[in-house]
Length: 349
Image (tube, rainbow, N blue to C red; front, side):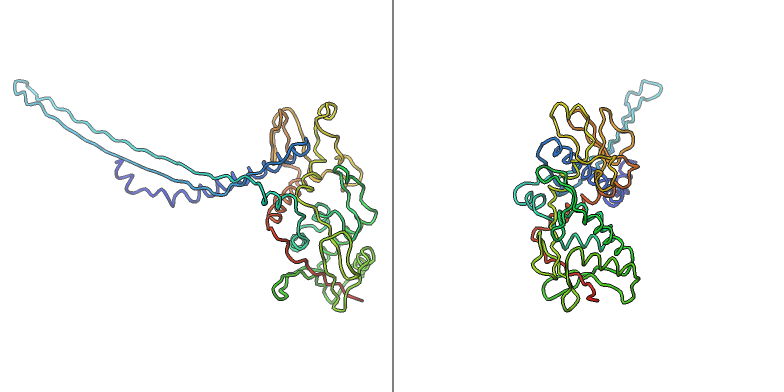
């Protein structure tokens, strides 16, 4: 029976469906927890530390054996000859996965954490359907010299009066359906184009005029406005987008953690610069990270750091969506060389 089972069973194909889903789920959960832990570490002044799962190799072994024996007594004086029959079987199943971890250090660490996000990839997220105001609120330090709010260190400041209305106008333009961004090839480089439909509602035109007036841009003869990395534009037909690095984004998220009051009183960390009860929703924490001495009951991601639990509530969809942005931004930050900036097409009339 053991030999028959070993001969008919197929270990490899039968494990793909189960193991593939299980490993993907485990890696995704650990990625979330690693990111959350590093946000908490930054809040307490610890350096972040990352390790990538570079490979997973799972090996299986199934062995089976069967033995049988029989003996009959040759003593004829007994009324009934004695006999002995033995049957032995054994089976061994071994699952031995090999998982390789690669610490994020050196140039890759600097590239992933310290270099600003490329403006072109920020706009690709907008084109993919992510809300323009949320993406720019999290990734932009300034647009054409108009500053975003910051809650970290010496850069702590309130947003310029024009910044939030500018984000609102860009979001309405995105929702109107009258504008879209697409990537086109120009020689060897790939650039983005903001395309406007021929027929536009009056409210769309008003938002376009507001964006142009606020940023102080004038389209060139082709109706295009280029986008580059920097604080101030080099000319009237350019938008300068000063993006944040992943380290800055993580620090901004960490500034809103609801740390225990006694940790602040003891000097273990600074007070939060983003409060959940702020009047303007954009002054509230990007991701609401709560804390308690006991493990949370229902969480999207939870980690334990120095005896305290920190977690994101699974019912907090806004925080979960922003946190998923962080994971996507990590992928964008690992591209290395900053690609060419996109070009926005804005009508001249």
